[in-house]
Length: 213
Ligand SMILES: C[S@@+](CC[C@H](N)C(=O)[O-])C[C@H]1O[C@@H](n2cnc3c(N)ncnc32)[C@H](O)[C@@H]1O
Ligand SMILES: [Zn+2]
Image 1 (tube, rainbow, N blue to C red):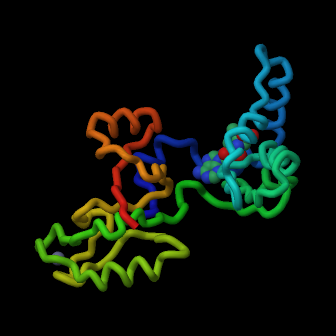
Image 2: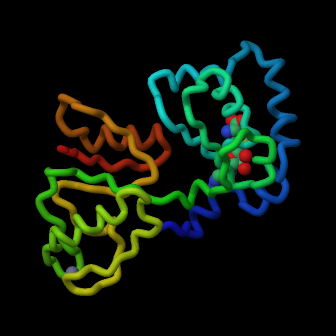
């Protein structure tokens, strides 16, 4: 579901403050960025981003791009990339190289992370019935391009209103705003301990999807 819980909202800075004062324009951010010239030892942060993107081609989305320092540098270092800037505050995007969009990172659509031919069945946790595989594949096809703005659904088996994320997928599938892909892993499943350690590093719990395409 896209709407944030009150707990999530309480854990992040009030969006009215972000948009109305802290990042209404780039004055405060630019003042903080200017301090970097006295940094010891000195790190070239935009240069680090360029290095990290060495193997990346196509479109790059900068979420929370602020006054576009990283975007400006990427335009110079990697003119082959199409860089799109997004920020929750329209004011701070004023001088950022286009294209830009005003967007709340917490309201990005969910992409389905599908296990491909590994999927044997989808079961309803409410009535225990098996969901029609055509229902599932139609759903995926319909949302392939734009993702899901909401996971709220009514299951065809018993008509219960539920979340797509709450159905039982065998093998596991998921819905996510970000995904870390390991191609041809040549290893077994990550253990529960591995996943906990990964989640701790990321600051967000992770779910493992083993896909075969
Ligand atoms: C510390 S600034 C960093 C700017 C830029 N990434 C940089 O490194 O120079 C954080 C930016 O994130 C934006 N931001 C905060 N919460 C956001 C949200 N939920 N969605 C999109 N942008 C957000 C703020 O408006 C601000 O411009
Ligand atoms: Zn059901």
